[in-house]
Amino acid sequence: MIDRSTERDSDRWIRPLPDRVVNKIAAGEVIERPAAVVKELVENALDAGADRIDITIEKSGVKQIRVVDNGCGIPEEQVQVAFGRHATSKISGFDDLESLSSYGFRGEALPSVASVSRLRMVSRPSSQTSGTEIIYEGGVLQSCQPAPSAVGTTVEAADLFYNTPARRKFLKTETTEARHISRLSTALAIGRYDVGFSLKMNGRVIFSLPSGQTLADRVATLLGSGRKFLSFSTDLGPVAIEGCIGTPDVVQNNRNGQYLFINGRYIFAPMLSHAFAAGYGELLVPGSFPIGALLLKIDPAEIDVNVHPSKTEVKMTQDRPIHDAVVTAIREALRHDGVIADFDSAGPTTAEGRQSFQPSRPAPGGHVIPGIGSQAGSSAQFLDELYRSSKTETTEPSDARLVTVNTETGEIVEATGHSEMPVSGDAEGPSGGYRLAGRFSDLYLLLQAGDDLYIVDQHTAHERVLYEETVRRIDEQTMSAQSILFPVQVELSPEQSALFESATEVFGRSGFVVAPFGGRMVNIEAVPSMMSGKSPEKMLLSVLDDIASLRKSGHDLLKAMAQSIACRAAVMAGDRLGDEEAVHLIDRLLQCDDKYSCPHGRPTFIKISREDLDRRFGRA
Image (cartoon, rainbow, N blue to C red):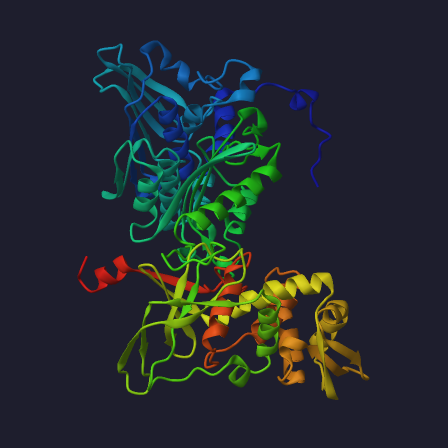
């Protein structure tokens, strides 16, 4: 126990701290690791109007950080002033905080860095014939004198945290600190893609980028030249958004590939990260995250960057509208930029202006494709129900050349002439026609649309159709049930039993009629009509397991139920669809709200262009 009886009143006297102590305290907030030094120095260079910035790092920044820019420079008489605490040229009064257009504004960066390193700066404005060199050690001025210099500023911070060993002790490994510097430098280079940047670490050039690039060029160079990115620019409500994002197959298992900016400032914003992924919807496989950059421009009066010393957290007065705008912008980019392609072809058009759907007809010697009812089990009932609910089908002749493959011998069989083609009766169908050219492995449907080949996964396509229809019917409480002639009893595990009790209402709305039968036993009296013909007990147990897994992944109960039913009821590999059934399935898929993937995130179709084939065969 501390004896405070001998303390004098003067020991508790309130007094200002020495500047050196104040600067070290500020450094603890602003300069927590070497990457923070890079951030502050580069942002100063950007505020100085530089269009070329070169970063050199030695020993993960602890040995030396060197930033060279060709900005406006600092006049001789202002050099020492720049190292005064809260000395800045970027704001002059409180009202300026409402309309910030600069990166820095607190005037803490230079004195904070100088207080925890051996710092040397040489700066020269274009109005002077020579520059000024200033040297600090541990926050103490050592010298300030003229020195030869090009226009711009060079800052060298060596022996970082040499005078604060406790801070240095908490640094991570060199590899970790170097990774932070690399990621931050990448972000700064993306956020200002018009500025030339280079990063050299331990003598190795990490990147060297010219000035005047586009966002697409910068993102492709830094995030992967072999990957496909989509660029877009739009104004939506309170925000203007410029983006360059990866296609749904360009993902990784963390958010490190996402770079978010507001008014040019690199930020961390969970709300925007959520919007980034939400824009892809179910195109993403669970646990994967898209990559790319989103640059948002928002009225400075609507945001507050003065939240954290690092200025990487931003408060927004209209966060929800901005979130929704980002989601909408990404969805539209995916829909209109070629990743999500329409079926365009110059196929024949009906009197109503719709394109005809042209399925191939098996040539002699090829497999006859039986109807879904003969092979696909109970899923036929639901598809047939959808089929009957569509408008009357018509036919019209076509001169399409039909090519099929004899799957027994591998021989290509060609047939030319007229054939009767089912025509979609849905005015909201695709904008162009396609021809059902064939099948592969009793799983994939091959479509030709113009010069493009589309390969449709019949299972994921049917799953998407069933999922959206099931969600709607559960919500409207119109799911049909198929009674079981002899009810089936099944015993649930404790976990399954608890889950069933919590989801009894949704099970009932989904077409299951299941009642307690004593203990953990339940009595199955009916199942959703689309699942009839399958083992009732297996279906119930499978749905329970699916729901348990999906709930852990964040799905709500209704969508988890619909996803499980759709997956279990959809046609499988080996289920053979007739021509009209295949065409109708594709027709229904193209009417879905999210026709490009199944609820699990797997694609429903892929596109291979004529150019892709020419390139693969050396014809490009």
